Length: 80
Image (cartoon, rainbow, N blue to C red; front, side):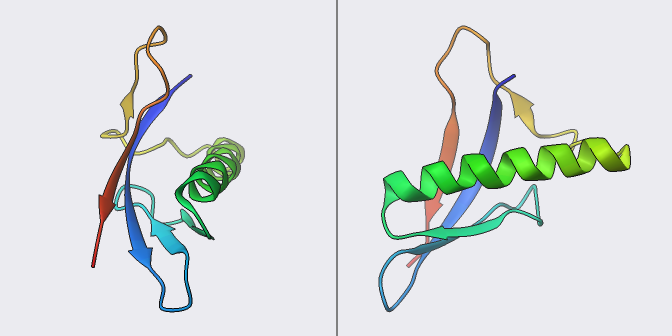
């Protein structure tokens, strides 16, 4: 199943980005490049999804499911 997750990428003074999501406060990761960030977000989201499942907790209702026939969707917001 595919999800659409809004992300906030915050540039770090030493380089790279810290990544959070307003819909999933548990999602906090980082990466040196956008490509690395996306890999780390996928890993972090999978861990969060499994944790929610183990706890019997549902993902936020406003987390949108992407169409199975479309590519994975990830929204990003870059803050200065």
